Image 1 (cartoon, rainbow, N blue to C red):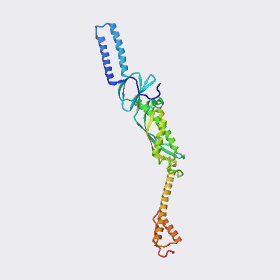
Image 2: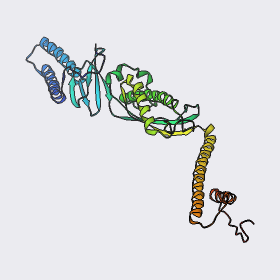
Image 3: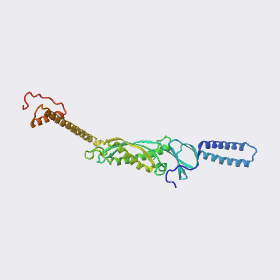
Image 4: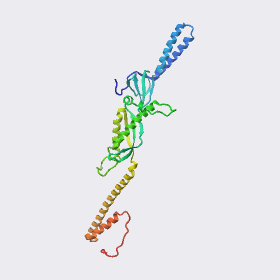
Length: 323
């Protein structure tokens, strides 16, 4: 008993010659039938026997018509003979096979899944809205046909619309991919923080700043979950990431505070460097000699001017340095 995908090794003939032969057989059947009823040279018994043989050949001719199949690029046919898997045909073209084979049609073309954002919790428990785009395709026709129950996942078409078997089957696979994508997304999101918390390492992997690493981890998780269905994930990417509405305003204020603190650190660091340079320059060039009190006052004034959010208003001292 075969338990994995194999190439079909049964009788598979070119469709065009078989089509011509079947047409010739049909023409011969019709010709013999007309001749048998119009000829006066044969007996009634012979006519009955000839008619029975003609009907039998006509039944065979009709059965032969059901053995033709056409395979387009990136399509496959799963061949089943009375419940037994006989292999998969992936060769493109027009063929004829034993009409008693059950032929299941599958498409191997890549398909997109744009999943709606779902609410998950990151590593620290913050609610996050996250969405994913998955590019997937069927890679193992045996697993896709026999290892999952795609019939129970079929989505019924709207009343009055034509039923497309292959479309319904691929829709069921899409539902399977969607469920597993949500599960993998929740798992990956729970492994990492949304953003840097300030308590970990600067090179810590986060959902927001480590896009490529997160996408690779997500793709690996999806391939592990979907391999049972013979589905391969070509690409998986997070296309939507944001805090949930209930904490978005608070987190925005936190990000603003972090930005303000970072900016203040840069401003203070630059101001201290400028004050140091000014004092050193005044001392080295001998422009003015300042005692420690005057240096402290000058440092205080310069820091106020350099760190202030508004432009400083100059005040001209018309007296001495001590007034």
